[in-house]
Amino acid sequence: MIDTSIKVSEYQARRKNVLSALKGSVGVVFAGDGAPPLRGEWFPNFDFKYLTGIGNEPGACVIFDPTNPDPRRKIMLLLKPVNPEMDVWDGYRDLVDEKLRKKLGFESIFRTNFLPRLLGEAAKRTKSMTCLHPLSTYTQPVSPDLDIFQKLSGRIPGSSIQDQSELITSHRMVKSASELKHIRSAIKATAEGIDRVLRASKAGINERQLHNTLVSGFTDMGAKTVAFNPIVGSGIRSTILHYKENDQLTSDGDLMVLDCGAEINGYASDITRTFPVNGKFTKRQKQVYEIVLKAQKASIAAVKPGATMVQVDQAARKVITDAGFGDYFLHGIGHHLGLETHDPGIQSAKLKPGMVVTIEPGIYLQDEKIGIRIEDDILVTKDGRQNLSSAIPKSVADIEAAMKKM
Ligand code: GLY
Ligand code: MN
Ligand code: MN
Image (cartoon, rainbow, N blue to C red):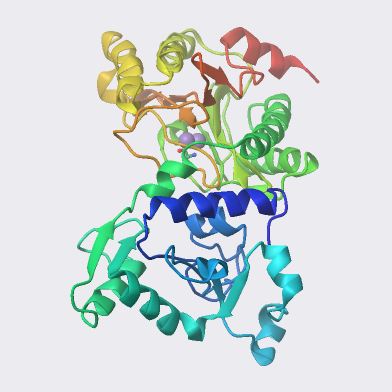
């Protein structure tokens, strides 16, 4: 139930950080609900996963009640009631006892039918409730904690609702040593998959065969699964930003965009390499490739503490625009990486040591069937940056050499 690749004490420390940032106000983080799907697996809200390590408890939540007079109840885990008839379908669950409290690192665990009482008592005492879930747009349902707090505030005269909806994101943005270890492992598995694809590629091979070769590299290196559906797109499909079919025959002279990542211990990697399926870049492909590579290097060099992702984006965009391809760099420079491939970030926030971001400029020339993207995973360090995926061939010469290997 709990992901033991991160120590229980680290989850406890993460929760304590939230508790103290609430400054006496009440907060709640929901896992989300829903039945396990037939295809794939059920995923909790990743803020809940970050705070608990629990990935298979639909309906669960954590209540933060900093002023509770009982110190054991300042942070409480609520789980859906055990239902032996339902558990036959979805898995047997533990009864609440000392063993479970120890395993999950919570001193207080209750069933969710206690939620209205526990949250109500806390809100009446503090008269202050704080939104921790990201706020939604007006076309989406109200975020789950704000929805409850609005109902509660109508029942508690003088109470108010505060906004700390970016708090957990700000914590998640800075990775711990154990998180970095898992991200590095995921990158290593991804490197193996990419290496196998580079060696297996030849004109005429089906994209699906390379897709399967890629995934076998991931899982042979201990990955549970892919972090996201990989993009294995050749020819015109290299220009489709979210291509997902991966089922067409490649042709001699095609470029291939391979955008992929493995998941290890719950953490993602996200790497893109672009290569000629026949192992040799044409003159034109090489010319455009070198521009994207120069842009990517300029952006990577701009990653450092104090910089913003906007500045990092501008560094690549300038290179691509100066080369005359500004209209063909269609997307942003990258995103944070962690539990999620697109980990949450705060656009205006300055980069800090411990953050991991992707740098992934591209040029997409539909008319020439040339799509090129190069993506690496970059750790912000005290002195600047470390490219965590630098071992994966990237220069024209290194890619061509890797493709010659048997
Ligand atoms: N593969 C998704 C991305 O690069 O953001
Ligand atoms: Mn990617
Ligand atoms: Mn990416």
